[in-house]
Length: 299
Image 1 (tube, rainbow, N blue to C red):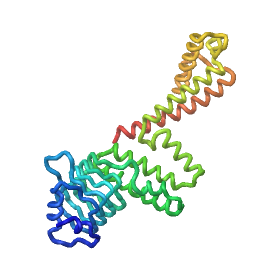
Image 2 (image 1 turned 135 degrees about the vertical axis):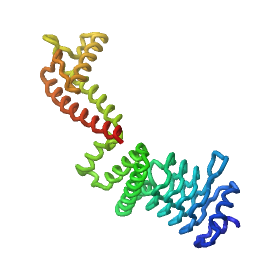
Image 3 (image 1 turned 180 degrees about the vertical axis):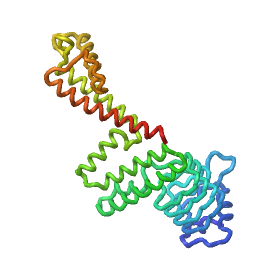
Image 4 (image 1 turned 60 degrees about the vertical axis):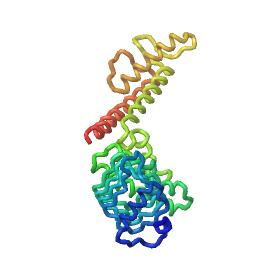
């Protein structure tokens, strides 16, 4: 059976379709452009035994195909439409799903370990390329639905790191649907930058380091007091003296940000307002870090 049969858009209804496709796969040649819409491929075995590279079923159409309990370990499905395909109970371990249309794809009870996913799904790419607002919004809604479904499926299998990435993308495309200059969109963007919607505790740490350094520079400019001595930048001081004074303002910034406040150094003048602002930001950031860290560790 040549590839013209498989690339024909007519619906495949042969009773031995599974056996024929398995036989074609074992030739080792890439299966490209195969039209398998609504095909019943239940239990098909497309595992390339004894080879580190899986079979290729690429640039094909598997719309509403039934692949329940299929054995698809390490299969390459890139750029294939899997829209509303049923992979219930299928083994997709290490599969390549880059460029696949995953709208409505059923992954219930499927093995999804180590799958190669796209950074963003096809619908989000189309939304970014679209110049039509209505079309763009439709693609974004589809992308949000896909990310939400993938997040739930990966969470149910304990793949929390992958689920976290899908959650970030879900929240991002939801943000894109908000009015450009709305307060909700701004707040959503800030939450993304500060903590990756609760999935990136390292971002909270990075933000803390930036804030501590920035406030230290402000104290270095406006000055803090150590008893009767003013600690600030001075043109009459050499590089070593200014460096030592900056380290003292950095220390003061750390204890202010963490609200420790040992009392050995104190702000003066404008630096008092700066210290109050840093203490407020520090309290909020530390609380945020605890929430994000606990969320990650208690999964």
